Image 1: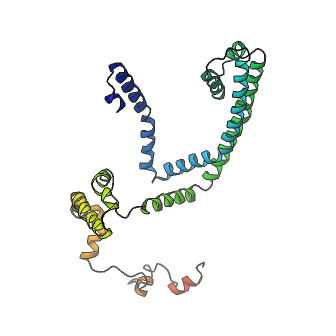
Image 2 (image 1 turned 90 degrees about the vertical axis):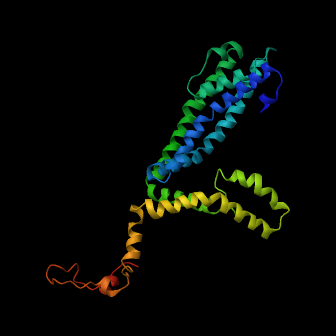
Image 3 (image 1 turned 90 degrees about the horizontal axis):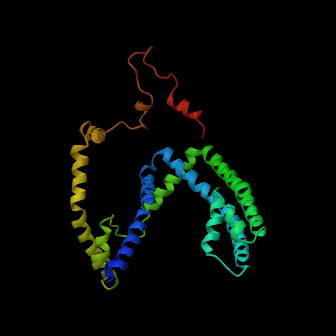
Length: 278
C-alpha cells in the first residue's frame, strides 16, 4: 500500500520488492496451518501435542540462553570497541547465532575482537551452548516425548476436547463464518453502537438469513438426497418403526427357538449385572 502511494518510481519499486519478499516468507506458515485440517487424526493430534509439550518444557532452556547471550554479546561488543573502531552490531549477533547453530566462525574473533580475549570468549560461548545447553534441550525434548507417548490416547482426547470447547464457545452471539465475517465488519458491526439491541438482533437475523440461505439449502439437499449412505440408518428408523429399547427385557434376554444351539448365554441379564464392576 505504501508503494502504491509513493510518487518516486525507484522508491515504489523498492517497496514492492520488500512486500513480495515479506509475502514469500509467509508460505511456510500457510503450509503449517494445513496441519490443523488433520488434527482430528490421532497420529497428527499426538504429534501436535508432543511439539507443544516440547516447546513448553524448553522454556527454561530459552531463559538460560537469553541470559547467557546477553552477557557474551556485551563482552564481544566491549572487546570490539576497545581499540576505538567498532564494527557493525550485526557481525557480533551473526557470529553468536552461527555458533549456536553449529557453524562457528573462529576467524572473526581472532581478527576483530582483541586476540586472545575475543577468541577465549568465543570458545566459552561455543562450549556452553553446543555442549551444555543443547544437550539440556535434547534431554527436555526426550522427557516431554516420553510423557506424551506413554499416555498418547488420553493426551490426544484431552487436546481434541479442548479445541472443540474453544471453538463452540464463541465470544459473539451472531457468528459469521469466514469469509462472511467481512460482511459483518463492513455492513453490520458499525450499527451496534447506536442501534437498539432488539433492532440490532433483527438486523443480524435478516442478514444471516440472506447470506446463509443458499449454503444451508445446498447442505440440506446434500444430506437429504445425495448422501444416501450416511442417512441409511435414519431412513430405516422412520420407515421401519421404532428401534428396540435396550432396557426392554426381551432385548436383554431374547428368547431363542432352538434351545441347544441358539442360546448366547444361559445366565440371566440381572445375574450378570450383579457381578459387573461399579
